[in-house]
Image (cartoon, rainbow, N blue to C red):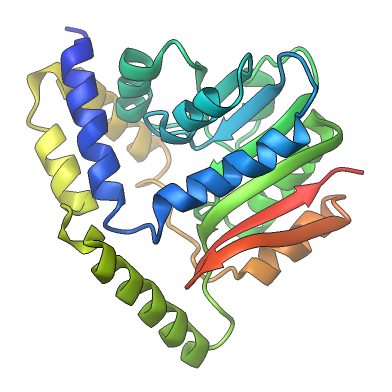
Length: 256
């Protein structure tokens, strides 16, 4: 049994609300990422964009709304989120089932031409350092000169004192906006698992997680400076932060 467009819309909208529980100023971060991509692709017909760890298409949908004529390839390893994206946002992207950083993942994208931009939000922290470096190097090869990698995520500061400070600022910001009132990640997944339309997809998800030995563990220990260092090692000499609130930051690496 497939997922109806009505059910997919409801689950994606509920996903958007629960993500507000975690991401400080999530919508503004999306907007900043789109600002960067819009600047990089200005004047280019049919720019090619890659959304890394796309989930149900949240960032891809916002990019499609901002950048007319963009071709978006969206990649993720979660069959539940991918199918929700296809059913609800299928018209805005081509969805690819692949494990970012695994052998052959870049070939599975079947791009056919250089990328203008590769974007990600709260996804690449699942990669251990060596795998992240390899992924940044692969992205450097996939991008055209002048193309960018844009990574929006929560990056912990180097010291415990600074971590407590940035966490406090982010928590205060979220409380003022009411974002903390949204359901959390675990509640969303528990509720989605009860939907009969998603049962087969959850079975696939469990099989995938077993194949990955329980799934990937988030490597939150990598700071923004660590990511910038890895980006430079991967060949991106021009790396900068363009936005930050608390520990939520947008890093941009430009291919020369």
